[in-house]
Length: 546
Image (cartoon, rainbow, N blue to C red; front, side):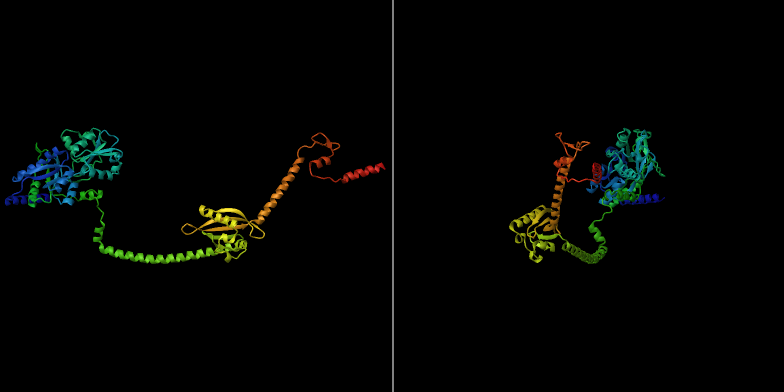
């Protein structure tokens, strides 16, 4: 009833316009999109021009087929007065050029009509490996074009809903503006699947070009009051829009004629009649474009810095003041904390330096520190003892001022080696400046500043005189032991000895008394005596002789 009242209102307006006798301009151009090609578009949409020409004899309405891109240019350049566009392009043209809808299409395939449409995703019926949308992963899909609302924009959204985003497809092919090519490509196995707007498969079947039994519809849905094959959500049909510069009275007259355009009795000339109803809400389409950030919502959700400042300058100012205050408090707090940390670090460093100095002062090793110019800047007590001078007399002087030229040169050469190689140097040195002279084990190495640059040399000298003497004694003992060992080795081996007289045979087969043989083969000397057993034995012999 509500739709009838609206149609009746438009009819009243139409009658009033006729009575007013207003003279309209001729050649009113209506742009239409090529859905099945330019020729089919001109034939299909011509029924609109015929109906308007019959109702407004003083004007000549013409159909101008356009692609998606050329349609926008024609609207932008003022080459059209009206246009029939898909829902997505209507939203784009509304935002960019201020077009407004005056009617929503009622589409037909035979006697079936609907003011809503969606997409059909399909494959060949014999493809047993593709029975649901999830099976399209790794498969190819063909559709009309990237700008086609139902056959691609809605298809892509439905695939994503079912867990098959476009990147999971093997490929997506675009056949152009003709939906027929999409269907035939799937039929001829040139693509694994295809997508077209609802009604296309039924129309091609009516024309005898295909049979529905050749195809399997994927993700098939059934909506109450919608009789076409369907795989997606439903959206309002094409919009008949008024271009911004078009006369409003002419627009009202056209809108009234569209609403009373007959569409329930197909004719031979127009078997698929077009009907029109009052403009439907296209907000569902708008939200879809915003979600996918498609034109004109490429930057949806993004706000420029200037716009954000303009809208929220008071809040931004308060936030900035609060932020600066917090920064100031944080800076003061951090500054105090840093000062405390720095004080604690310096305190700990001083304690460590005092400990190190105590250790250096207490160590028996001589420790020197010289700057890069060779001047002594630190000398501990053992080091001063080596020089035979006080620390105060040594500090600030160089080796050439403290030693003989040849000694000073050797010291300077060692310092230069450390500075150039940036590595430590260890060697033994005999210091004759002391009485008695001392053998010293000297280690020199680089010292670095906070920037990692060498700015000083340290010298540690350890007195190894006693160690050297002990080493010499050990060496002498080793020589003595080796000599004794070589002597003992002269008596090694098998010595032939007589079992009765105990004489020993030499290498020349001469027999010698045992003591003579041993004396000649070693440094051993003999002194003769008598053992207790022999003494008793000989004493008994003497007694018997008496």
